[in-house]
Image (cartoon, rainbow, N blue to C red; front, side, top):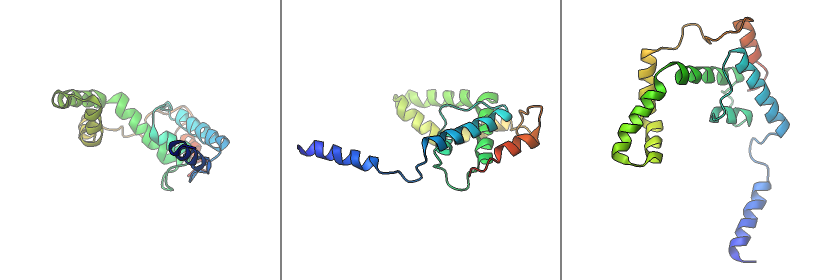
Length: 154
């Protein structure tokens, strides 16, 4: 067998071994269902592009992340992206930076890692998080929302 094919075969064999923190498909689907229900109770849609959601569903987060803390962060991100000028400020910053960089991929990497925290502070100083949190309640109220987030996942 040629050397390159042998290396590929070794990699395939290595990938067939269980990954650390690997959970079954059924467990992942249950975690996703419970997270979806908790988000629904507070009126926030499940984001499709969230690494936090992916890592929670796959049980890849450290023990400090509970269902309640994940829901809290997702609520805050929903507010930030949908009720403040955060995204327009990010786009504005990226456009200005790209005038010099002229490479959108590198520009967004820089913006997301360096500029975004400053833009977030600016957006939240103009439109702070609501005092009542989470701010989107269903008629059943806060107690039911919090109880729903305590489904035993950590």
